[in-house]
Length: 342
Image (cartoon, rainbow, N blue to C red; front, top):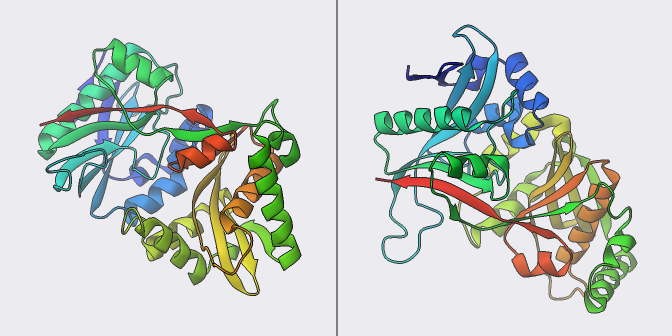
């Protein structure tokens, strides 16, 4: 087992989150408000049935004493994959990569029950580098770190270079809009009119919009639509059996928002919940030519309403589709990664 020491703690490497234990892990990530991607159930699922395969999970765990409670933790994943940010010649080359978090998480943090400091971040960075050395990887580091967050600032402070990647989009709800109409007053008149018109046409057509716990609303249509939508840009991104396992593992922390018409699923959003955020995390849409309204727009309106009704402070809407999300008033959160190539 690899171990890195500082004056205050020892960082060791666990092969499974089960080695840390549900109680200890949950206590730590809840204490620091880590996003749902760091929940015990999420990690257990993607460890045993990874969405990106092959993938082998590793957990860097800092303890004040070797037998003490975890002070800070960092999940990372050893994968054989392409660099999602590579362009030009060789961009499709398969690499051995050690990276945290999984690409499906757009909010990489260092969960800690104590304030992050430069020495603590440096301890973890050195431990990650040591693990990368022993794993003989081509690329290692941290992806999807908030550019204006404390982790990015401290990485820079200890001399780790970062590079901009693609942003994620979010809508602050605390102290913000209380209703969909209130939010739409902040966007342009044509955009406001289009969304309202499509929502009205969907209602007139008899479209059914429902939000239920994921395990209750999950069916093959949901899995097929998520898979087909992702395959347009990233084939294999949502393997149906593994995505189903994750939805079922998350229980009440996952909801499924559906737009159905005459027994046909037209749009779906897999919504994940943590204490302060609702994440409109994954989904897909169909675009039947015979409709005079867009399932994508109707689904987005339903996501906004669900976020406001959730009581959470923030609605997270993931990456990509930049023009649409900006047009409808979502805020871009710049992301960076710290990556070392060999």
